[in-house]
Image (cartoon, rainbow, N blue to C red; front, side, top):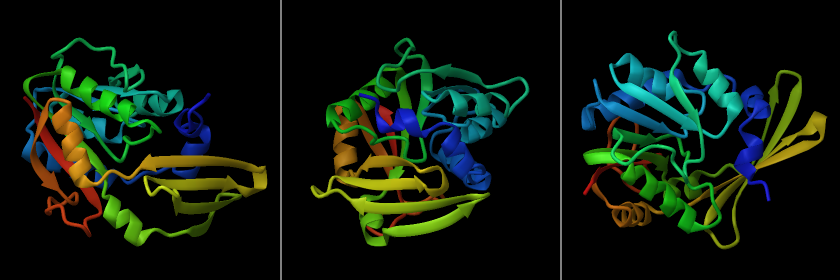
Length: 240
């Protein structure tokens, strides 16, 4: 069965979200550099999407590889720099890299939590830990589950060019997932996003189980502490 993320991150996604916030990406790259300096280091941007973070790592002197499953997003990423970024199409659950290949692995902008089975989430973290060298650092930038539950907007309508888009959001009946249904009204098509609502403590436990020790918990891109109202849950973890 095709997973939702295999269908969604393509041409339709790019039409609806043509200009993700580049200033936000620059701010996050600077935040990561303060906590895990990467100039001259080997960096893997895991689920790099269109490469907006990878570009900033490269511009700050990192040797970057970006991995993503989506060909349309990788195609966009390839044209962001000249010479182009080093990009690989692959599944983050089965990384095509040797053990110890990187000094820093990042997984940003909630590109985690996509799977129905938590064993697959653990596989992502274990794979990230495996490709880190001794003392290597993993940075996870994730949604803060408490904040998502408190600020959820159930219904939204927007106009994107000539396309009317209706978005319905909700929490699954078991409370484990936040879902977003995107309806392209004029085309009669719909897509679904489903992301796991891990608490910060659950994420810390999973990181530890993957062989990573959490050094810092951060709650926003300016570097504030992680509290229940924080918009993000950012973890800086070191390979044990």
